[in-house]
Image (cartoon, rainbow, N blue to C red; front, side, top):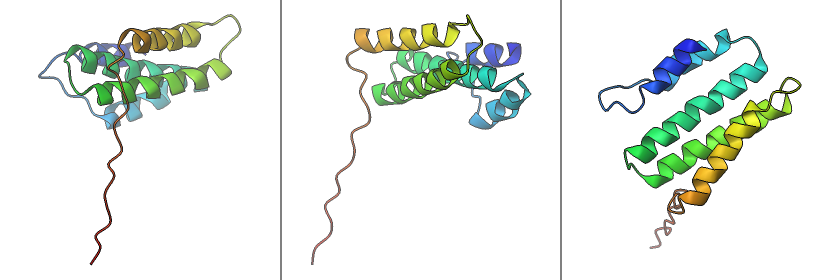
Length: 116
């Protein structure tokens, strides 16, 4: 858990890259399905926030936030009694969407079929 948080704290560094594979190796080490879902959401949310701060493509941040929210929904469904962390994180992502109207999904490319 601590290593995941430490790695995600570095997402804002321009010289730092951590791959999806690194987290795929760490997540199975967590105690249970709730923690794996919750921290998958944390990873995605922190990637989204780093993208937003770096003013990268808003569609990338949008996709990371949506992924985080999906993980938080899964975590909420199996959360321990009295643990509202996943709900609170989901609400944080929703507020970010409300305050950043420019966050939009990637536009689907509409390719016209080649006709002879």
